[in-house]
Length: 270
Image (tube, rainbow, N blue to C red):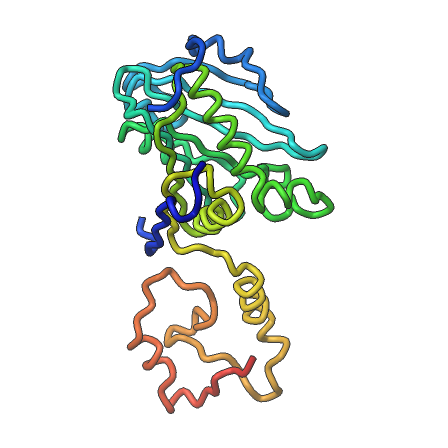
């Protein structure tokens, strides 16, 4: 059994062979695989270079398995796991995290993991809706629980079971990689299910969601709380408030220039 003492957890800025099973299945036969609360909706083989979806192509020969998991009455968790079948599998498992309020599976990120030799899985956290994202929480505690922790856990369990059914082997090592909301998911996994992964990469985790969303609400309600006669500091062009979300390229000198005394503008108090 693993413990947190034996598990490596890495925190980074956001930039970015086991026991033998009784027998191995074919890819297409996995549609009949029985897993708790799960319906396998797709089990298909792809050759290297085949289009999987949109612009995403299979980087190697692989088996793509997709399914729906319903651990709660109103749950609707989608997951996919891709397993290299051309001899390039390194024997290990990688699971990717999400961003924002999820709602979709990043097939391109799964493809990247597979290109590096990993059997790789991802989930939409059960928030694909409709409506997608945070609105799916309203009046639906199952979806809230799924987003909070349950979708990652059941995806882990099901994906490992699929890998074992297909290859006849459990993954030798298992890793989780996530940034932003995926970083939050990574920390939650380490905290609640420390035996699931041998290593976790935590990128820019949004784990203090109450604090983050509270500050966002305060900022967006700023005009309501401004005292009479006061106004926001505006950029020189007058087209954008400094407190509005920018394109990520705002420079310090731009802020100083906008706040020159000639502007006669007072900084707002929240």
